[in-house]
Length: 133
Image: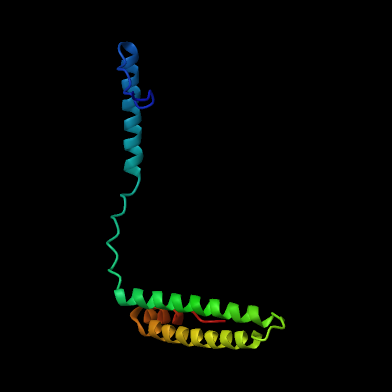
């Protein structure tokens, strides 16, 4: 059963119907005057240029390498403050340092690949417009 809120309104009959119709006509006339004062609406923007799949791949590779580097560095810093007297502590620390260096090298390679892509070139051009402090 439909709700009362969405049910169609009953037609107004008699003198009240003429008054309501006159009010609607006056309201429509007022809205037409307001619309005439407003500037025309802008035309919809053109469709954006297609995104280059190579650029997307370079950005994703850079993001993944950055995340891996950040995680490896966090593990290294966490082990740095760990003063347990286990025999394998220094081996863990050395492995964490090696993993961090490898992740940093992968991040550098991904950053170089990104900056060689068209998006990286556009980023460099945009940065060149504004002086650094």
